[in-house]
Image (cartoon, rainbow, N blue to C red):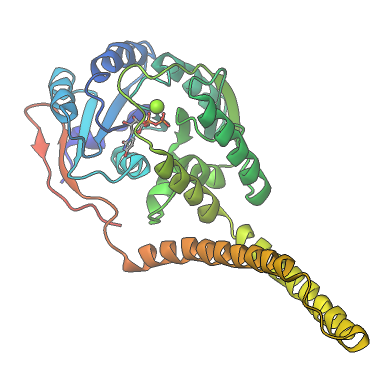
Length: 330
Ligand code: UDP
Ligand code: MG
């Protein structure tokens, strides 16, 4: 049963995934709520605690008790990843416009009014480009390379895929909520459903406190999600490479056979042959790995397990407050 408060629509919903952010949360509240109050329209803030092992859930709960009128907290019982946290937040949203934001203050909350204003100009998706990205040089260079690869193999046009400060229309969020995929990249998914997307330039700050929650390995995995989730071009490239190599090696067989009959057996060039073989084995292994990336994802999809599990939702005014236990479905 939904309470009247839950059903009443609001103008703007903000969704914030939180994972071990105890040192930065207060600073986030101090800047986020004034920025939202300044919007002059109804809003709600939905925090999703992604299984933090620090004091983040307690800090979120106490903030909820301070502003229960505009705050909701979804508590996962494990770490399911930033994108799953955002998806769980999306399911809770009621706003006509939904904004996503990181909890570490790298995305200034003061930019939200500009995003909202741009949405009201008639766009259903507002992407962002970080004016000056405050991340490590390695992250900036790797991200630029991935951006370029993604541009080539998908139809998604995003200048800066990494920035999570974005705004989505209710319809786009509803469509995302209807998707049941396990490995996804929300800005890209939203882009594919949007009719009139636009990008604006926003500020980007250094992390206020704590460290990035992404290890190099996780970043690689995330980029594989982006590539395999939105394109099968890598597989097509692979079959093209395979075809070319087969043709080339057929030619080589003909040449070597002819040589054999004209000039007799040859033993020179063994190491060249070995090097050539290693190269081909490398390509083959890469191909098998690439296939594995797709098959692994198919496997995860067909297992059809719940994508995340919600322990409790703090919502409603204190009188109406109910904490719901549910295993949130696919
Ligand atoms: N995050 C999350 N679950 C995770 C990793 C990160 O909810 O498993 C949240 C994190 O608390 C932050 C946002 O996702 O609000 C972005 O994470 P982070 O700042 O570590 O990423 P980066 O800015 O380094 O890309
Ligand atoms: Mg960050």
